[in-house]
Length: 326
Image 1 (cartoon, one colour):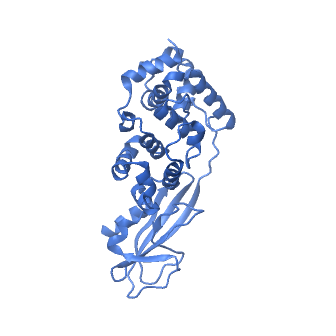
Image 2: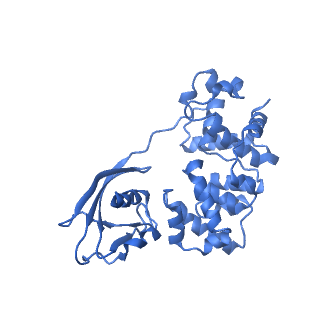
Image 3: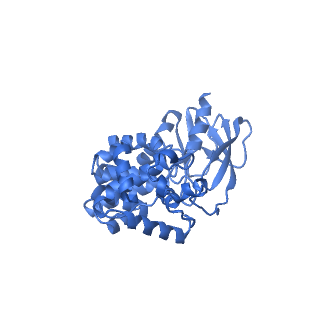
């Protein structure tokens, strides 16, 4: 039995029950793919459900405000995905409907080769192979490929191999099978090799190299950054600022960010650690309760404290705000 048939047979018996697999609606499928970029299914599922309940169609999502979308996205991180999601929804409305070709799908904001292949194959059964972390791992181990997956050469090699294995008339099933196989069977740590249906033909298993594959070049340098936030409480109001383009958390809100702590401020927590992909943040959080509103930069907005939940904030700020109630 060849690789493709084995994977499809395994999928018939072991596929994950996911709500976006119960429909061919490209909106529901596209939404799931965007949410699951850099997010585990367990974390992303409730967000998908909330989005679908609040905005039943892509037209409804397009008509929402960016603030509403960011607020619903709060806690998922990588907020550019939410902004791209909103932009793409507007693009689809302008197009008169969801594009049904790979090139058309790739025109949507935030959609790259992988996401386009996933949406196209699952929604329209287009014969395009997906190549994500799960697929890289399964192919690297089974075929003993040592080319680093995060290089141009590696991406081309794995994409070509995945495409050659794809059954043209079963693109949807095969792509989902590969993703599930990597997530359930051929996992990053402690893969279930002893019950693997590909064990006999797996080079990594035969040569005891399962833990060595796939290969990834180490190029990422983690930077550290220190932030000082002042939560101002003045006559039932507080001041927040919306972050602009060119930095982390674009479009989200935060308390007063400053280098100088005002006299009378009380330290609530120091060096709260928050890890992002390319940097580690350390934040100090202060509470200041002046009698009169201080002068702040013009882009700060005074709101009622009770209304702060109406504004989207990054996870770090969410953690800091929780300190106010402890």
